[in-house]
Length: 145
Image (cartoon, rainbow, N blue to C red):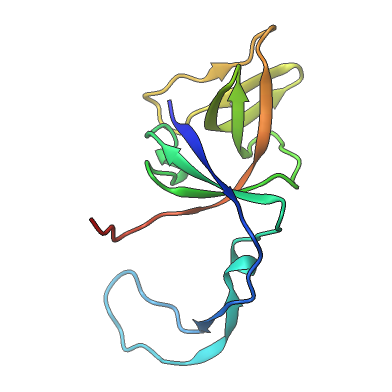
């Protein structure tokens, strides 16, 4: 079962990075057009709403079907109300997880996005806290030792 490690709150930033209007093909290469269209803030791109946003590191493989891999950094908003279908950071009886929230009437289920992991049904007597809604994930493609 994928757990989550809280990394901390995110502060706002005034840094803007160049954003090129050309798309980069993921298939066969084609000549790129170096056309700077605008500047883009990572705050805007990742929808960071400080101080209501925090970062979490995913641990495990239960969410790989949602594109969340072991070690990814998740951007989590506490400002959003969690709804059925959202990926959330949830604490069940003190253990923290990243899962997809499923609600049907009084039935609440935290589902993995990997068929090797069973869903976690919230039973009477369980303490469930939804810490926030995952709005983005950051996946590194080059790791340095």
